[in-house]
Amino acid sequence: MNPTERMIQILERRYKKMTPGSLRIFRRAEKAMIRGGSHSLRLLSPYPFFVKNASGPSVIDIDGNEYLDFWQGHYANILGHNPGLTVPGDKNAGLEEESLHTGFEVETQVRLAELLLKLIGWKGHKVRFTTSGTLAAMYAVMLALGKTGRDEIVKIGGGWHGASPLLLKGVKFDPERGFRQIESAGVPESLGRKIHIVRFNDPDGLERLFQKRGDRIACFILEPYLGTGGFLPATREFLSEARRLTARCGAVLIFDEIISGFRFAPTGVQRLAGIEPDLSTFGKVIGGGHAVAAVLGKAEIMDCIQAGPGRRNRVQFTGGTFSAHPQYLRAGLKMLLRLVAQAGEIYPRIAAMGERLRTRVEEVFAAEGYNVYCTGRGNEVVGGSSLLMVNFLRSGRPVRRAEDVQDPRLSNIRLREEILRLALLTRGVHAVHGGGAVSAAHAEQDIDRAVEAFAETARLFKKSGIS
Ligand SMILES: Cc1ncc(COP(=O)(O)O)c(C=O)c1O
Image 1 (tube, rainbow, N blue to C red):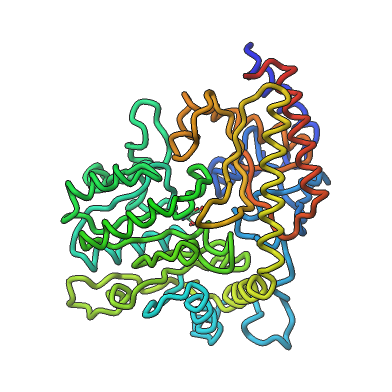
Image 2: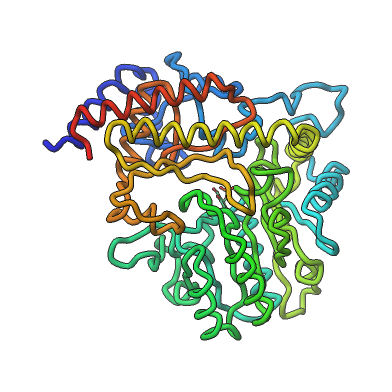
């Protein structure tokens, strides 16, 4: 058995010893649910732990283990777990605090829409709410297709916009094909051919594609801070080129800000960059821990939603049963208001903790001879950043694009995604994709505790001969 397999065996044994109660529940889950759960990232190998309590920086599983958590509700919980945004059962608070959906419009959604528009700050934009980032991104692309009457989509290699068929290509790196493959059965090849992939932070590649196909391209969708594809900031140059080329060709520029929105400041990266996209999507943070997402964009494009039934470019973004759920909107409103009120304190503090975590993690691995580079850094556009992704690089090349951290020839993916996660869990730290996000509920001592867990892990890897 090679050192990696031996290491996994040792870690799994430890984990199983810690989590017998979770294993019992998982056995039932496997019988009742496909693969034992509802989200593949939560279903870690050999089985997930089941959470009983979550508060501030930590969660506690049903066996009583406490984990310092950097996953924080898929990065939605920028204030930490359960920061007291909702008061369920408080009858004095009125309809919008109660948990059931009514199926009616409530004023809160107007207030949340107004606040979003004010914080993003462009003139002539409008909002429509939905219930997930996947849907928001899908509707944004449908709006672009409807508005332009074209049918080609451009996205970033490594860009994740949820599992809508329109965007399920070029998410995971394939050693043979790079970021060119369709990700799922159910996405027709003919649709896949309409989705073009470009490299992140590569303005020349973008220009070449637009020169060739500019008159057929409906939209370019990108995260202005690449999320799960590598936690990499877009350069100002790349964002400006994206704006210039889409405008020149009559294509719609979509910024997916589902991770980046309200992560670096109480606004979007678009505002920090001073670049106005035609459409943008928000989710995660804006729901205050609930299922709220939004498409925000220029009124003349958003108007395709209400175009008459006979109109060629009418986009069926009519809303779903749980769109604009009053309780969720209320939590979202409270979240954004708190972020605005405390922005001067929260954002510099979480960015400073993020910086300390990234630097110290690199140091503790370097001390054991590992070439670790932590992405999640800020840049000239976003300033500081609270994000972290640990990358075990195989060589010292600069890291700017998803390829640099997703290509197994350049970076040890298994060590980051699987082994590091399990090793940290057995030391009371929960990290997904080699890290996560520091929240306002984390304290300096939590960063010390996390660094210690990374340092122990580095020593363990070295001792076990993992490379
Ligand atoms: C940038 C981005 N867009 C879209 C999505 C999909 O959002 P959801 O999981 O809410 O459907 C995600 C989810 O992680 C995301 O990171």
